Length: 335
Image (cartoon, rainbow, N blue to C red; front, side, top):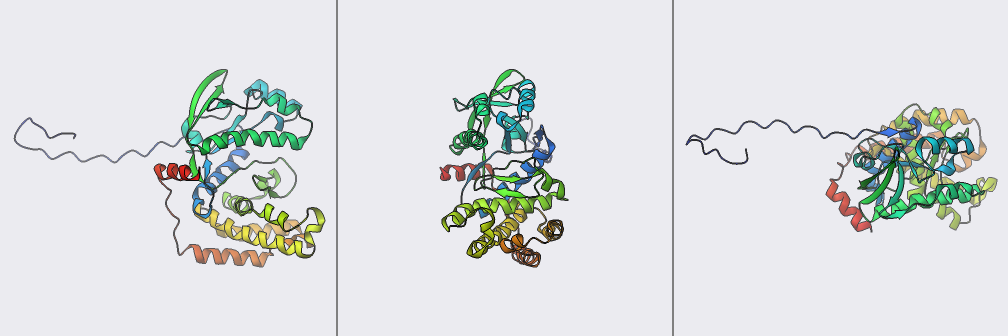
């Protein structure tokens, strides 16, 4: 009741309040289920593990795809289906993420952010050098990220031939940039900015807990600046990486990524004991590879990391998610 009743001298007791309805969850949308799975686990890691990252990143739960990523047949199909020649396309939105709550949908195309148009996808696709195309793709995503670091972003969006205005309000978390590579390679990679698991590795994992272990490990390489550190230490690429001091330096970064990755997965609510059966199967599938054991921890070491992480982390329950105003404040401080 907003005010006392004036209908009589007797004051009736106010009725019991009904419990507030649970907030509606904005559903996920996607054009490809495998990509949504990667995006969802990565978003949870970036959000839940925020306490372990010094860089505050504008998390959105938005996964984009771009015309240059497709072959000629794929480009024609994407232009016909989703007008992907107009701008970056929305490949997936994670459930109840800022992207989903904003109303963005898989199949949308981003035309501009805060009045700035994105680069012409056809010109990007015309570049013959694959590395140049990738740099142009990442520049488009960096353009959106830069605007989101300033706060809510106004997006001009194309949906089924009609333009719409959408406001995207990011949350603060760890720097999470992922993309799924369609590849027969049995691996996942961290290039300093992005994490790239392969479809073959995704098919190998038996649960999202295992997937969180992998993504947490690779994200940790990026959070800890391992690529730059190894370059500064003169660790070369190729087969020479597994020789001499290079091998021991790489192994040190792998151990650091294991330990931080377990913390990220735990903070995001995943079962980190799933790492042990995963590594057992992974090593069995790899067979005896001397180079792998020179540069990566062995199975016993990785099992010990899990045991130590469980002992440490179970003494401190996961922190509750920060309220929206705290997240906005953290983004403001990060600018």
